[in-house]
Image (cartoon, rainbow, N blue to C red; front, side, top):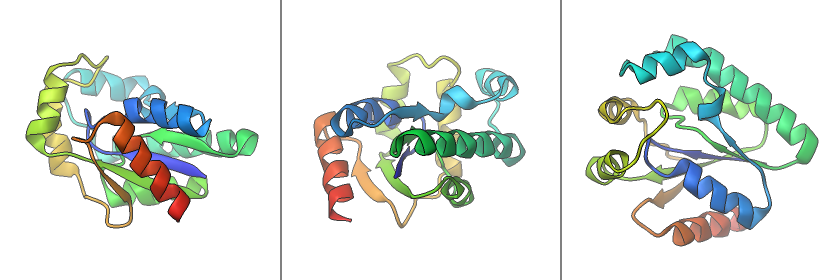
Length: 161
């Protein structure tokens, strides 16, 4: 199984993924690490990515997920996956479950302002919310809950499927 933790920048994908990974004993893959240098440079310059920028990146993610599941079975992916067509593309990797880390703009903006991401400036947050197509078929988790509570909700939902 592949669990995709999705949401805008600052929603906690990596943090939740690390804790969830420890809880389940599954590895975490961070999609941010798979961006080609040109995408990183655009984002670092405050320029939102286009779909044309994202397709090769999403295909690379699918490739990495297939390799990971072939070796070890289960994996967690931290990935924005903001649009339904991106999530559809990710399902080519295999048995995928999406977890939507949901938060309002003010909550997420406060988090983003308090941290330093290696290339994702706070100025791009509005473009992420603009692009976001909230999923209707995902495990929905409110990011205002504690990390432990979010992980518990995800584990419970996965076990109840």
